[in-house]
Length: 171
Image (tube, rainbow, N blue to C red; front, side, top):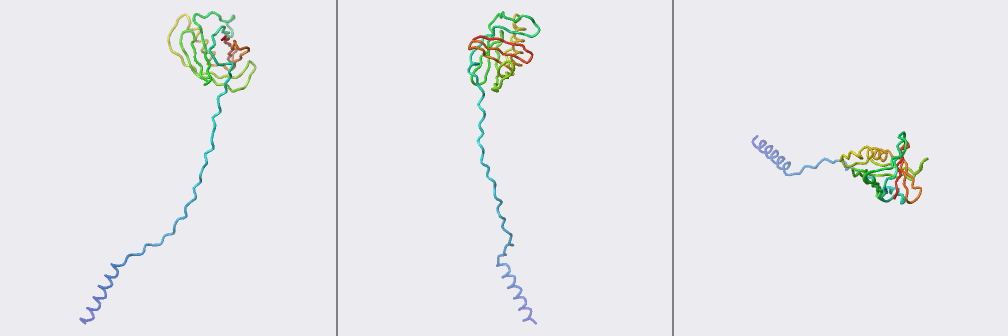
């Protein structure tokens, strides 16, 4: 009996030693098939170049301001009122008291008065000039709502809003 217990104990001991010395085999997991990734090729976008009218470019001085319902045009200005259009779609000038600036956009289209234009919003300095403030306010209002312009000759520019208010400049 002692021999039997000794044999069983030896077998258990050997089984434990063999079990402790072996490395377990990791479970087999299926390998994932990589999902193909889509490659997007960027489509080059070209920003449309702004429409520029060479006839509009330069510095213009206001000569007449026609305001609907006011009778005769305003032609006397205490200080020159100017508008400068550059080839980067910028507009700046002096409204008779304050300097102003903003942007303008030409669509290339035409309407019953002339060519399409969008001006503004214009921003200006905020000085108060008693003798010119009402004229300047009307001027900037017409410029901000302008929808049309015409250059009938190289020295004359007319800008008009939807109400028919018109600014006439000379170069």
